[in-house]
Image (cartoon, rainbow over all chains, first blue to last red; front, side):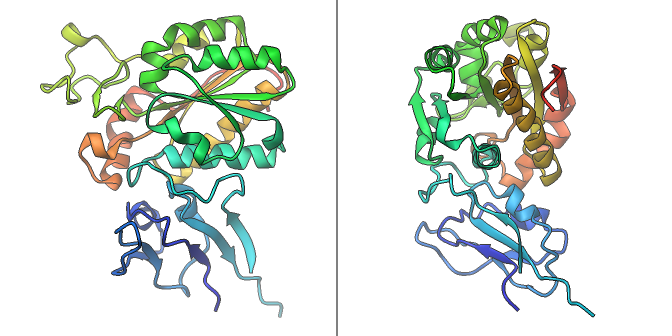
Length: 75
Length: 248
């Protein structure tokens, strides 16, 4: 499945606010290092993400660029 | 995939110069989102203050002016009076608005100038290293109050929205907080009403936003947001203090 949260890792400053507000705990601070020297946040569990957008709302660096929700499946 | 949220195009590609976890970026995003939603980007002039947000014009792509310390309200008055068709926002911190610029802010409010003030309150002078500001809480340790702020020596914290709500000029005065997604959604609602107050030519509008300063509070960003909820919001309660008819 496509990623529900698009994170611009170069903008991230590893403050951890998105991780703290995520109700489903699907975000974490990764081991990678961006060009500023911070460990960017990453979405590690795309399946359980509910696209609530809390991470987008709290992100102070506009690093979370898009939050998307899958279209409901028609029966 | 349905798009729920998207970073506003008015926010530039340049990275912000703020410390990690500084809510200035949240306030910038709320302003940019609302300007796009209300179709005001082309006629907006933002007056940036002296403080951490001094380079704000790098991050929001609107017309901008840089004011001297504390004079943003006076400058915004001049811009609005010479260009009445423009949409003028003054973005100020607590050291800027509540200390050196209190005279300009109070008189702009008393005259009922058609400007919107976004007032960021983080309880200290963040840019210069965390000195005491008028909004520092009693007992809070800063670099100039190493034993905590004492009322008999340093006075009491200043409640700007309550003060200005007593005047006749303001159309909309409110206080919001930027500590949690719920409060950020509420802050956007308050800011929309403040923008409406100017758009509908009703009078002066101000929204105070309770912010954090993780670096100078010597906390992690998550701890700083918790401190807002536990210590700051009981002293500075969220709410609308003056709502004129027609801001909805």
